[in-house]
Length: 108
Length: 120
Image (cartoon, rainbow over all chains, first blue to last red; front, side, top):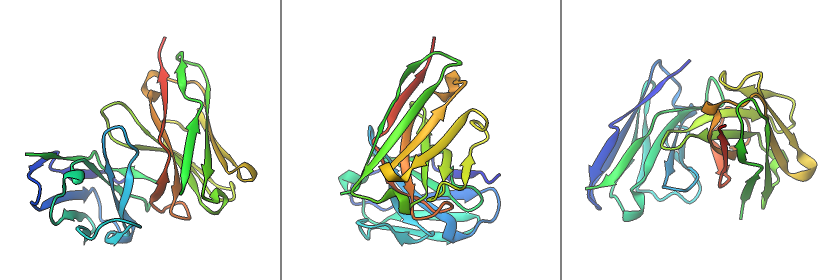
């Protein structure tokens, strides 16, 4: 079973700064089976990135995904106030869904 | 606008049963594999179960295998999760979601969630 480890656990940044979130798989995985989600308090998750680097419908271009197995990155180029949230990576290749434990991006 | 609306959550005693429902609007759910994903309070996301668009193939997380059953009624644009032999560790918000077309694809649309509490 593939385990996804996200780092850091919490990222404290100011609006306008760049955020770099990491997701490491316990074994090499195909990038086209890697996705990223954003979740705000009291809301359902929202798909941001799929296939490692493709933005989902309606997602601003300040969000970008990159990497190849086992290391993947979600980058938010300039944080907007609405971007402070928890972010999860997901691998959906070997089973329908394995999630990382999440990275919280909080306002510094 | 795509909407998935869950219902059927509530308080149940350990060992009891509950059936969750999810109805879609603004989307023909029969075209998509669908899933249940849960989240315990203050915790991360855990995939629970998925079913193919035609309902012919189902998948379960090891933690619920043999206790939960996923099903769908495409004529009603509906997804279900029958949960038996419930345990305290099943307490969570349960989200209904569509896969991006087939299983082994990301979760594209999500419901607002239904809270299931297993406690005596």
